[in-house]
Image 1: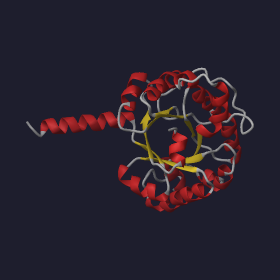
Image 2: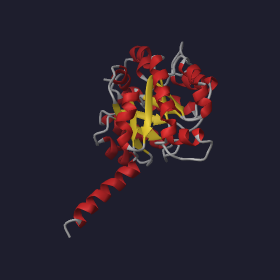
Image 3: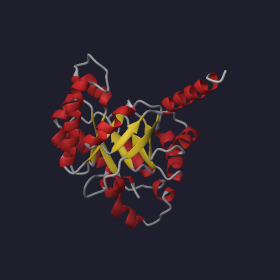
Image 4: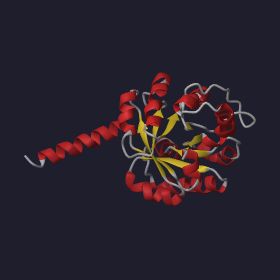
Length: 255
């Protein structure tokens, strides 16, 4: 089942977060219990070549491949889809115009202006049926606009109304900075939780999908209750650090 189908059926999907631009590391992350793997080009080290190579082991592991593109790199949204990504997360979508540009890059006509060229995506999915691929892609690939600024919050209803925008992805760290006018970095800031809940409510009411990055896993249940169904947890560097700490603690406890 595709990522789009699972989310639209009401499932909660957990995605790993990959910032190390190495296909072998991505392969290891994809072998864990996460449902999906997101390759991060914005703040992570991923680049075009590592995305091209890194999506392959995610697909081979039968996990859902997602890419977060750099700010404004809507051309990369199209390329990542052509490489085999199922979903694209675009940061700093702060206006309806930003959302329109993003949607045009991710959807084929008549919804958008995506150019034909899935030379990697189709073989990786073991299909050569071009007509079926063209007919299904607009519904099977997802475009998530990040909501992480006051401008984006003000424009939320307009962003959600853009054809081709499938959902929003909340970045709570940047949102906390915006919410406090640059005074606080706190992805669990209590004062912004009503706003984050309202984003989910308005998104679901518009028939779109709500996603969020979770720094503290103890908040996951709260975000699920709000309606967030795609949840990103941690990062590959954090997974390594936590695993190493657990092993060392276990070893030292027996000294």
